[in-house]
Length: 133
Image (cartoon, rainbow, N blue to C red; front, top):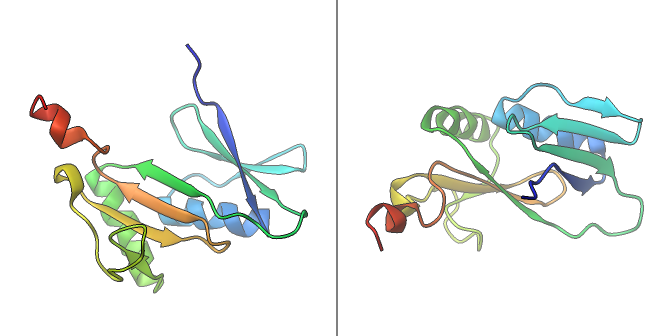
């Protein structure tokens, strides 16, 4: 069985990108790897490996993080305290709101390079699976 081990997150400044996600999610500081990457340990055997892109324009990506209710409260508190624009959906129509999909909570925001980040407290489809549907 294959398991995800790491994902490279290309950004304009690897330190700024790694520091952003560490700050919002309350994670351990990133660790340098070979001077090329800053590894952010996600705590489940997976790391986000931040690297500075030097090949022109960046293509924004989407990363979603499953968090506990307490982690959501803490992260959402940091997002609002820092005045970071956030939305209930990826189309960015409902600024300043969160969603309640699958009986949980979720919110989207952009990191400094425009990657659309998301935290959710229930995986998508969780409510359907719980009801046997």
